[in-house]
Length: 111
Length: 111
Image (cartoon, rainbow over all chains, first blue to last red; front, side, top):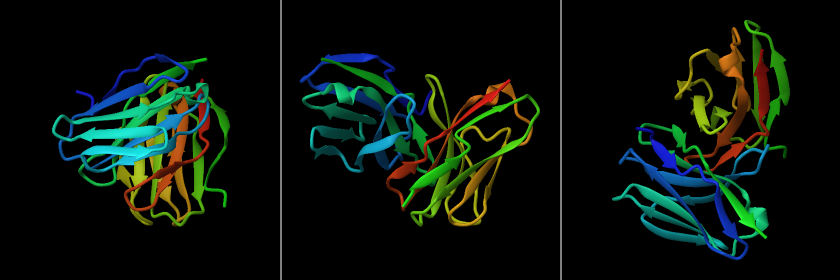
């Protein structure tokens, strides 16, 4: 079983809609969770981090964490064509500073 | 403040050749990481260094060696390159257990 799973997509949404990206993880001891955005040919950049159950909002982005279900999601409101990218979920697993990334979900926002 | 820098940006090797990928950060971060990224696979951790003088294996360490030369620099060496090591390599650094900052990547092709 892969430690961090994401739907590979592509996920296509119209401009202005809400994009919902999902991630599940296998290690119940995981403590911190991150969403990175990666444009084609570029390096990943952090857009959200979340450490406790519930929602965390930052501008148009909301991260949601449910540790009981081992599930973390990212909502992008009012999606823009510039949001078209691959979104990587990353989990800091329990035994040290070892990060595990999911395969990424490719998002396409259609004008 | 350059952040995380990597050299070279591109490299082509023949099977069996060796090379070292260089990474440096100027943010005074303790932790540094080496990842490889293959299509559809997300980022996979090769090695990481939690502090100067320490290194630990990640998910895919075989065929690689690392050196944490000082707090700023963390190099990745391929002793005998194989076509399976064709990939994009990213270096990252991190303060505490929080955000990772990624370098621009090295695109390596082994023929």
